[in-house]
Image (cartoon, rainbow over all chains, first blue to last red):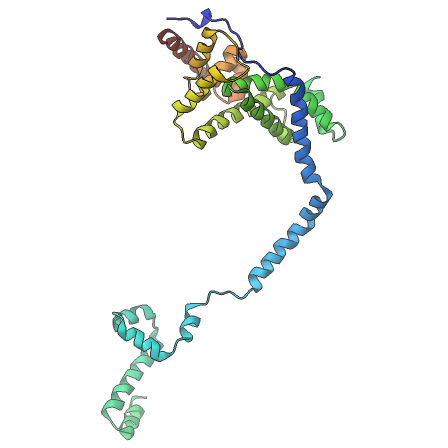
Length: 138
Length: 179
């Protein structure tokens, strides 16, 4: 086995002539360039004042610009009831499905029941009979 | 110029540039040779050495003097070297062996490399080692840095460094006798 100690400890790498005389200048140039860019008076001023103004402006623009996204309720209100009914009739959605997602409270349920009763009464009775039935109900 | 004096000059805005220029002149060779042995190519070593001193300039105000200035600069240099080599592997999506192969071919083709066959063979054997182990070997063998100082630079225990160095020697000697 070849031993490491048999090999003279020697640096085989070289540099171009005068390299170490130039390197500090190159480094200092880069340091100065970086520094001077951030120390430009115009840039300093713009960073100090323009940046907060820009952020404020963007913030105001965000809050004041009317949003193009509408809420589902707003979008639905633009569609006529006839179209909605026609759509629901054509789909596979059952009444039970609708009731499940409708999230009705007790008052809504009572009012819905009343409407259903009214509708069935109006189909079975004349105007006077409906009125009498309603009076009894309420 | 003593490190204390250098730091005083750097911390004084009036003499900051002069002080930093002195720091570069003081440490440039040691940093460059450390980097050069890790990246092999002169142009890469030149870029990396400049980047290291730019980092030193940026961070010098945070240097708390709880270690020697030289140790602190070496720590930045070794971290930069290792992350440069890691980035190189990731950038080219190359397996470790291929990046090692690139460095080996640079040993034969790049400018500013002298040395006889056995010296080049030693460098090729070094390129078989993982980067961190190669760094440890270079610091100990070429720079003759004491383990205690290496421990501060690499933030690794003295025991682990000793084991890594002896393991590296074994691998190198195996490579030299098989090749």
